[in-house]
Length: 89
Length: 192
Image 1: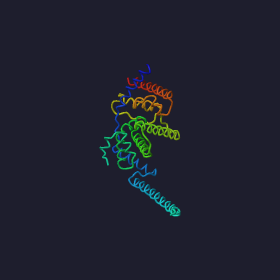
Image 2: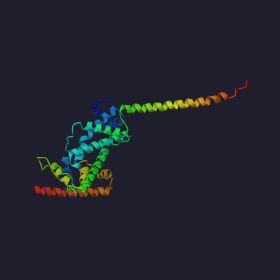
Image 3: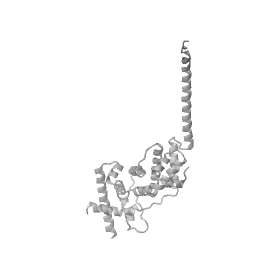
Image 4: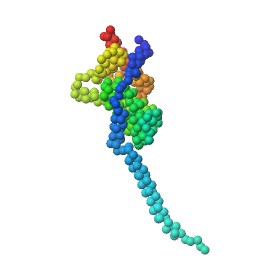
């Protein structure tokens, strides 16, 4: 028997498997979803809304720190400006 | 927020983008993806592993790993090939670990693993024939036949998926086909 014919015969035999329908347990998707959430949390990254709020707060804190740092720099630089000699009359 | 029915109307790419987000919509999108692909994935794993409960466990682990990868920012091109890769690796590892345990405990279970019990009726049907014959094949042969004739992957795709060379994939497929046909012939002769 040639390989092509054998391949075709096999493909036909496996055809019934291609049509095979598996009944998946009820609420499989919900179970998977809950397991995925648990896995994510145990990895240290909470996926919930609090996680998002936390990230936003961190970003705001970082912006505020940058703003304060800029003010401090500005305060340090300003006396030098005052020290500049006045234009002669 | 989008409802579950709305999620079901979205395509895989849109759901993947949503699933990567960290809010309720993301979780619902992920659940919609699971619902859409669960029957296909459990079926693939059922053919590979031979038991529905084990197939569901590995399918769950596959989806969980996919979810973690999505949340980790992994870009996905083609959901099914990606899930198939994760699932076949997990199934392979499961079989390998089971064989290691088997050797450790010197259990006398044949290499083909747990047999799938044929249905009460229609033993001569092609499906039952396969359910009887597939478990008798060694795991790599069963795997390559399922990928070729159920998943309808090309030899190149199989080679890529299994991480083996093209000629090795062709060789494995030829040997698997030969072994399966020999078993099939034996079954037909005994049945007639």
